[in-house]
Amino acid sequence: MGNSTATRARLLAAATEEFATHGIAGARVDRIAAAAASNKSLIYSYFGNKDALFDVAFDTRVDADIANIAFTPEDLPGYAIKLYDMYLGDPMLVRLLTWARLERTPVGPLFDRRPDHDDVKFAAIADAQRGGLLVEDVDAADIWSMLIALAGTWAQAAIIHTADTSEPVADHDRRRAALAATVRRAFCRLH
Image (cartoon, rainbow, N blue to C red; front, side, top):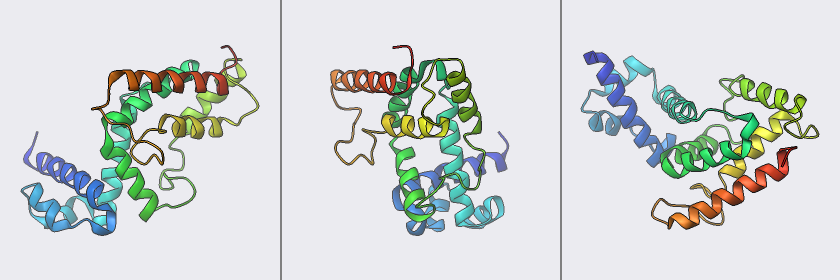
């Protein structure tokens, strides 16, 4: 990895941590530079400004986590379980999502900069609906939104209970089973 590539990666990692901890308004460019053992002028050189840096950090984290989970519209319950595990394993992602909603996009699509972000998933859900695998009386975009919300039931922004990796395995297994059953009953035509 070249020096500029390594520096950019260190800055991005430090920025991701800083934004997850302090949000956009509370994040400080000088702390990011110090944590990355870099010069803060390089942040502006590589990323533009603090808001643009947040966008890159946010998009990179979301895209990396989602890329690790193959979307399976023919097995929405299994996909929901994978999302549960993703949220459980990456509390920083949920904090970034929360800050993005609080400080950037309180209503409407979270990815307003990338309006076609979920189009492939909508199309796959619609195909599964036409193929008789999923219910047809719920719009594909609504299935996607509810699936994400159900999987995040125990994520860090949960109002009732936030799951943690230190909890007993049996608790996670119980939640995964409940999640899969709920998704199956709500969206799958063939139980």
